Image 1 (cartoon, rainbow, N blue to C red):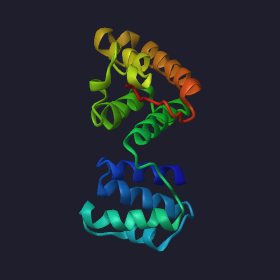
Image 2: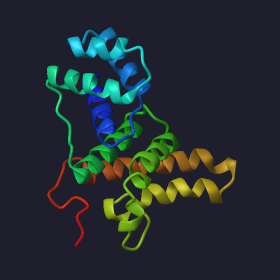
Image 3: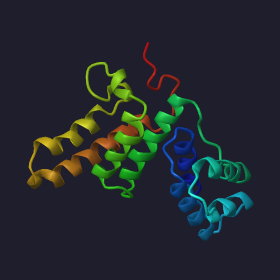
Image 4: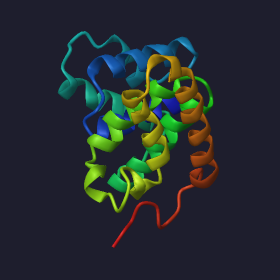
Length: 172
């Protein structure tokens, strides 16, 4: 549960979280027995104003001693590991996880501008994205096969990128 709180902290930092996201994860955490005064304030916040809600959520993370990356490159790798890990754990369907990865990471951080040879190669996700884009090229009869291939590529990616590295995604 603390991981979910952390993920929303990261998403909040880069402008991806909504007030509903923060209230929902705060409510879920409280129901799971995690408590802090600011977390309760976040869950019960009546307004739909992220600008007003964000400080309470950030304070809740401080009260719960939940740290999260704030450097852009660290955030990119963190979110990649999170979404790909959620696919690996079966919490997200492969196509759903890659869809979130595309929206929250690839497009949000303009990773397409960092492409060397293949889409996503700056962060070693080119095979995952290649499989994902196969949905556009192959018919519905092959969708299950594509999902399996995406899952396999996610697992390979995690084996090679499970821990942060000083050289992660940094190209000259």
